[in-house]
Amino acid sequence: MNDKAISAENLTKQFGTFTAVDSISFDVGRGEVFGFLGANGAGKTTAMRMLCGLSRPTSGSAMVAGFDINRESEKLKKNIGYMSQKFSLYEDLKVWENLRLFGGIYGMKDKEIAQRTDEMLGELGLESERETLVRELPVGWKQKLAFTVSVFHNPGVVFLDEPTGGVDPYTRRQFWQLIYKVADRGITVFVTTHYMDEAAYCDRVSIMVDGRIEALDTPSRLKENYAAGSMDEVFRQLARKALRSGD
Amino acid sequence: MRALNGVSFETEKGEMFGIIGPDGAGKTTLFRILTSLMLPDEGDVKVGGFDTAGQYQQVRNLIGYMPGRFSLYQDLSVEENLAFFATVYNTTIEENYHLIEDIYRQIEPFKDRRAGKLSGGMKQKLALCCSLIHKPEVLFLDEPTTGIDPVSRRELWEMLRKLKAQGITIIVSTPYMDEAVICDRIALIKNGEFLTVDSPANITKAFPDKLWSVQTDHRHRLMHDLHNCSFVRSSFLFGDSFHVSFTPDGSPERLENYLHVSGHTKIGIDCIEPGVEDCFLAMLKDNDQAELMQTIEG
Image (cartoon, rainbow over the protein chains, first blue to last red):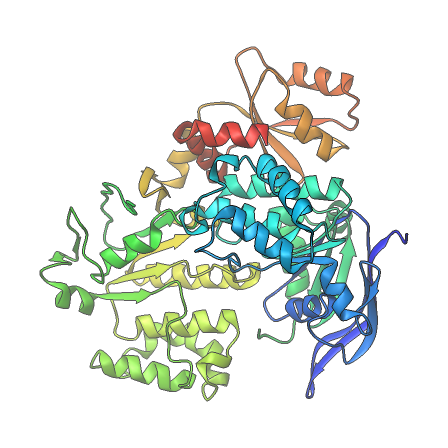
């Protein structure tokens, strides 16, 4: 198997005359925790939608989890996980019912679903909440459960779109422990965040400005290259170059 | 469910008061009660001397409120939204233009654009203008920077600082700990209760232990090794290092030795000043030991 989980080549998306994503090329290794940063409107969401097979590039190509985003977008969708910043579980289903539902959607067998449910609830410490309606869970637990659902079918790559927005500092750290755990299992994690301390938790980080990737490296080398004391400073130096604003 | 539980506080005129806490802590419920939009089951609130229950009309004339969710008219243009809010408050854009000038100038090039088509940062600026156009004495901002990138966040706080300088009292909530230090005083809120109310300086001064920043070459393993270390009281990930406090029998020398034996290299242990986030984490620990245990074991 290829050791690249994602490899994008000159990926471009235009809306009319507006180039949202401007010929970006990069690789992400298997099991890597990859931070995808950029100001509002830099093109992150558009790039992510293409990598998930939800939007066709105007030009360029990418392989994600072994599939071509142009030609194999349906197979691709089965082999990736996605968690959006908005809470995406069914509030009036129980905890186990949510797992059952998403497992079924991804074509998992009943036996596999039952086994994984026990496993995942054990890992989260949620065994006693199996029969609880998701609506009744505290916010932090919902986020952790949503993450669990996104990796339930053992995808090659999981995309996390601002997974920790509005979460308390304590739960954010628990969340990152879960991220490390799935990365250690070989699942590649592609994550966006507005918390710059979290950027430092990633193995490598890319920063988008005006549709292009302006910088891509490990957090420590980025800080070195930009003579910055923190990732926040690196980000501000780069984002200041932006000419366009908008979502 | 008790969204708020026995919250009491006062703010001075012209103060910038921050309410810091995670989603679900009760921040928005508190704002709705403070702005007279919701009645409390118990207790009462006075804003500018007026009771929010009995004298809500006077209260509403005094205050500006920017809710967390974008609540302007998406189909109206930037200028139309502003004119609408001015009219509702029986004033005109011109009359109080000086208050919003700094902010409005940044979005003026887009004044004919529909509000729904603005970027996140620009929406926030427009919403701020609309909440200021009637010259409120007290401004309530519910999470104005959530989901906004670090550069726009900084700009927004700079604007709030200027408004404060004009004598406006500002009550602002945020989930970002680093924004707390800009406020005169902050309340840390969790599960509907204030854990503490004080100036950021006093809060960090009250941090009970010495705090150390610990770094090695193996971050994943360091997390594990620190959690299993008997003389480490607490350890939390902060960027590329861990903030660590010791039990009475712990010391940086002892930790360095322990990490060395465990195979870590490039070990760095430095004494640091605690920040608001360190204090919040310590309070969460005191507040809810069970939750902490799950973190450590997780």
